[in-house]
Length: 79
Image 1 (cartoon, one colour):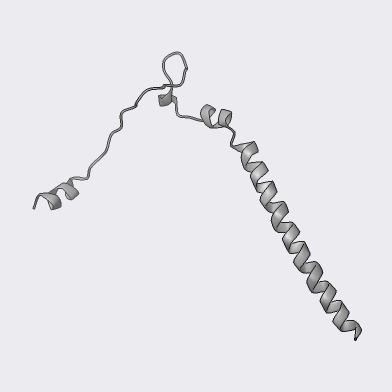
Image 2 (cartoon, helix red, strand yellow):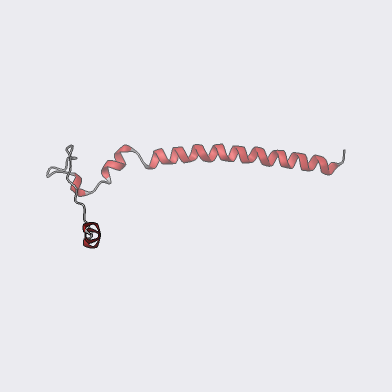
């Protein structure tokens, strides 16, 4: 066989192997960084002040919510 055939075979094979290794390494690094940056402690410490009581403790009860309704939407449903 010619030398160009060997060069093409080994370059295609090595490119495919490097692609596979890059995908696996990138996936692993993404999981590690996600776990490192978004831990439970950080997610609790970044909560809004409304989620804490007067002593600074997290509120463990049902919270009320408000839904704002546009008056134009009400007029269409009444008709």
